Length: 136
Image (cartoon, rainbow, N blue to C red; front, side, top):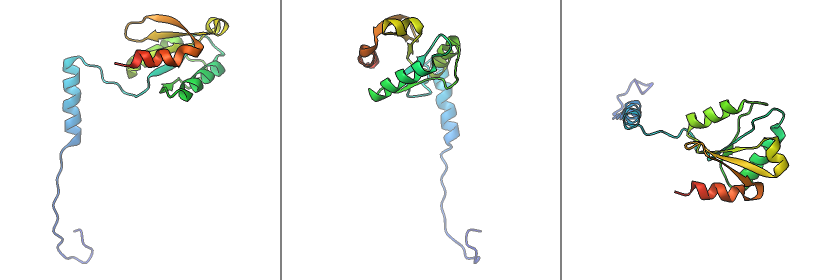
């Protein structure tokens, strides 16, 4: 079957059933109540108002330059609730919210997704504060 000339070819095969292993691990995680992170993203950049795509892009670029794993929704004007729900679903621990008021004040609202606590951080100190919060 494996040789086109019809000669017998000795072979050995092994299967570990990787899907079964993942199924068992998922079941154990659900039973223990532990949340599985679906991404390595550390911070989600979000905006509460429309027409702030350029502000999101500028902030995410600053975070990437600082070595922070950040992402944003790629829709032009996503709703804030949808952005926060995405963070909860994917296990992203922090949200950097930038709105018109934050732009005027030169701050970024940093939200802890688990506790829903929000703090205004000066923009130039944002990367350092994110690193401080992510250290276990």
